[in-house]
Image 1 (cartoon, rainbow, N blue to C red):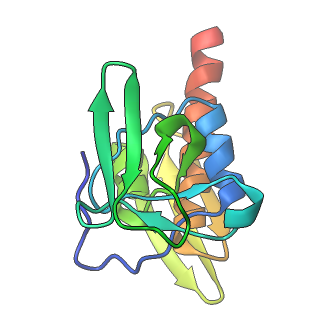
Image 2: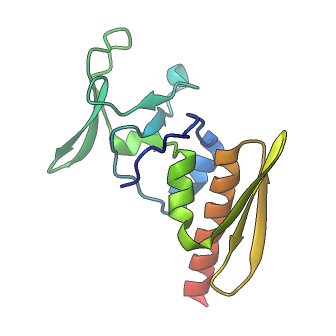
Length: 151
């Protein structure tokens, strides 16, 4: 799986984009350093990080469970990975774009990611954060791949 880059800023994609990516089939195998949120009203806005010290992914025959070590303040012992929403980092999203990635341009307060599809179509995706620009590009790439598969 992808590792955190030294330049990782800690920013994650929006929950809205993360939900869309999950809906179109982006799968997640939890690894140390990954960030996620729980879609529970009392945890809105909380971002958790997988770490052997605090949140650890446990593999069982029934599936993956995220164990919360020493978090008595929330009384969370564990949650099923299906109840967690992965919030990919900038480096993970860039890695998932692979060879389609062409450039990232900053024009504060916005950022543009440019990709090149297998058909030679260059597209630009603009957002207020770098991770959201990468996520928008990935969402489009996956949707185009699904459309191509159906054609």
